[in-house]
Image (cartoon, rainbow, N blue to C red; front, side):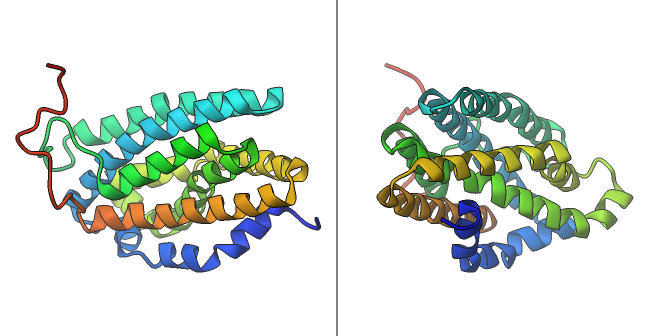
Length: 239
C-alpha cells in the first residue's frame, strides 16, 4: 500500500469537502455575518454532539490495540467532554447570543444521526473502521478552522471577544492541529494492520462521517427541527 492511507481517504472525499467549503454557514461564520440564531443552533447541537462524540472516543480507547492509541483517544475523550464543552457553554451563556428557546435542547435529526453512527461504529465495528469514522470530525474541523482563520482577521481586529472569532481560534490553534496529526497517524497505523475488507470499510466509514459533517453544519444554518416534536411528552424526567 503506497503512500499514506489517510491521504487516500482525504482525496476520495474531495467532492464532499468542496461542498462543505461552499456552505453558506461557514462563509458567513468567517465573515462574522452569520445570524446569531443560527450560531446558537449550531452551538447547542454541537454541545449535544460533543457529549456523544466523547463516548465514541472513550469506547475507541478501550478497543485500541496499543498504549499510545489508548492514551490519545482517552485524552481526546476528556478534552471533548470537558474543555470543548466548556467553551460552548461559555459562548452560549456569555450574553452575546439570543436567549435559548428551550432549557433542554433536543438533538436535531442530523445531530442524532451523526452521534448514533459514531457510537455504533465505535461499539461494533473493528478498531480500524471505528478509528476511520472518528477521524473526519478532527480533520475537517482543523481544515475549516485554518481556512476561516484567514477570513476572520477583520472580525478579530474589530472585536477580540466576538463569539464567532473565538470559535475559529479554538480549531485553528496549534494544539488542535497537532491532535489531528496524531489522529491521522493512528488511523494510518490501523490501516497497515487491517485486512483488505477492513480497509474498504474504513474508506466507507470515513466518507459517511464526512457526509455527516456536511449535513451537521447545513442543518444549523437551516435551523433544522423535527417535523413532529415530542411536545406533551415528558422525555427528561423519570416517572
